[in-house]
Image (cartoon, rainbow, N blue to C red):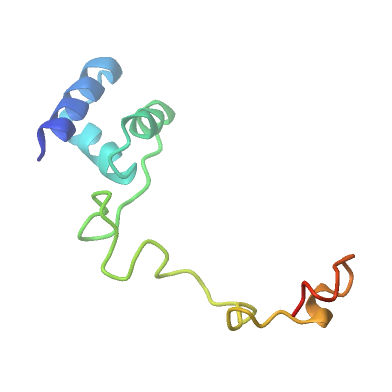
Length: 95
């Protein structure tokens, strides 16, 4: 545990009155953001972190690896007049 995280855990224990283990869980669930961890502690609801933990570093696939692909992303630069036809845009801008 880095010195910054250790200090954050100690501060959370001191200001919340919760156990060290609970404070570590809250800080892990908050991606190492002490203010959010404090809110978790005060609300009594600490989100469960998947096995392996979050640790604020993100997974190998990036932060959004579980986000659904809605199929409307398309290729970059593929806008056409149909997609933007309802807006008052100069036709030269669409080229």
